[in-house]
Length: 300
Image 1 (spheres, one colour):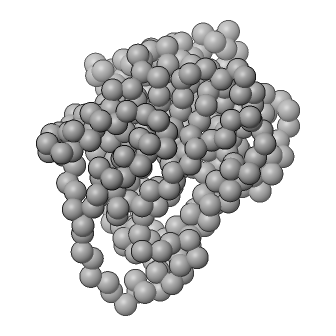
Image 2 (image 1 turned 180 degrees about the vertical axis):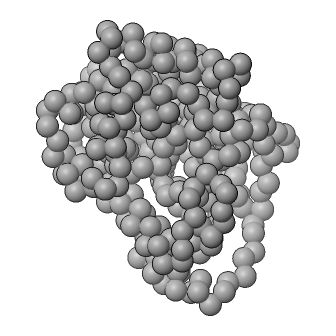
């Protein structure tokens, strides 16, 4: 990755575990003047460019099909969804953590992945009039891969959420994320957050680029309790203008969900209302195990 070739257009990557509030955070950022909410675009090859939950007559579908057209034009007819989906899994998914973390990939795979992500984000930028894209794909290994291969400057938000709340949410069924039992939910959340920490440490200590990526750690509970404070923190760190979003929250105005490709089911609504305020949660006995098990990375 050569910083000399970086354009002024930037990417903000939201990292975290499932059910941590990444889609909501993406929408919050996307209500500013200069940011486009893309959602979980790691699924673009898997879903063959079709946003889940939207038919051919919707603006969502039409927009992402325009991106698709630009995207494949850059491959000169040599790209296909199946091979890109397979490549994405090999480089970005948790199961390949060790080789991906250590950068043990063939030159051919690395070269194709670099083409893939840069063609994709360039295609999105060509179809919007904003200088910043938010990718809320969550996966820590995708964050590392984008940092290594993106031609655009990329900064990171690590969104943490109280493990007790997340583990209990995994008992719910019939929502985007599959349900898990108590032990598997604890193990999953612990592993993913440790991966996030390791990846961010590696990125911050890397010398792959002359520019130093900016990293902001946000706790979901703080975001809900004091959204303006947390948004101002990001605004200052990333040097972006979030005043429009802040004004909407201050005036209790609805937030537009935009054209997110994939994410939490809230993306299916045209607008959402942000309900701030501290939430009180009464702990059960099992919750003390969750709190202790995740204590090496989470503090209230």
